[in-house]
Amino acid sequence: MRDAVFECSEISRIRRSWSSEEIQNYIRSLPLWTGAVEVSQHFGGLTNRTYFATDGDGKRYAIRCGVDQYRTRQTSVVQCTLAAHKLGVGPCLRYWEPNLTITDFIASPVMTEEQIEEPAMMAHVIERMKLLHANSDAIAETISYWWPFHTIRRYLNTMERGVAASDFQPSAWVGDVPYFRDVTDRLERAIRPFIPVFTHNDLAYVNMMFNPKGEVLFIDWDAGAYGNPKSDIADMLTWIDADDAMDRYAVATYFADADSAEIEATLHEVRAFKMMSMLRVLGEVMITLLDPDYFVSQQEYAIGMKEYFPDEEPRLAGLLDMLHPKFDRDWASYGANYS
Image (tube, rainbow, N blue to C red; front, side, top):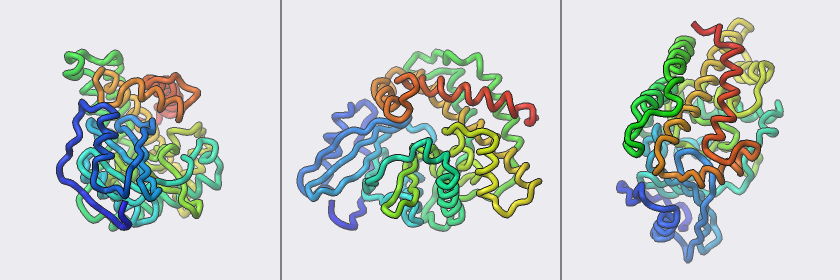
């Protein structure tokens, strides 16, 4: 690809019905590449297909393609990706069109659960997170607003009514909807007034990599938006085996100047967002399973599960098996504190 290129198209030619091979052929046909380009699929993620490309001059790129992205708005994805790179916490965007983005490839492994649980690494991630939150002025154009409580309510509505692809049959978990609604309402009331800032909103450790200096970079900006910074802290804690001590360490590290009373009040909010983060993913999986013709196939999900969560069942529902017990555990421990 030509150096310093940044190109875009206002029109998407990608269709929901395309197979992965059709998408790869389309990527190869884009007039961006230097010489012949090699494209291969990389598995993982709920709402996208991901590909790696190497063009004729040996440069590598990461490509994300998604049609049914639920919470995603393409303008927001693009602007958040651009702003993150400007701040030095994300890869450089090279090309976009609705449903497709191409960024520079990050030549590093993905963060592991063991790494982020190390106090020094978690402190570094929090430092990078705060850099993002403190620089909302890096965003040049309009982006979305992220409120996970609204997202969950949309998912619960879909669980009740079903989707066209399965003849509007309700979810197998529809019986849980009243309980989930009550939990959502109770946790939402715990959030105090705040000033929205630039947030990632899906800061699982699998969305973190490293630049050549060893600094953490954040990838996958599908949920990037204005939001509550405590939601990013909660997302980070959701995907690891964070106990009370680790929750407290994360909050005390981010809010280093807060007194003990403020730390406790903030911890109450972070745990509300943490339970919402788990419930959001549970709801997303539950409604995705309603659609047998979803953009990403069950086989692709299975391969992604093997790569990122090898101890779980290699199927999309394996995320339910992983997160539902964690949600139940946290609600049993802290739910009585939310009225």
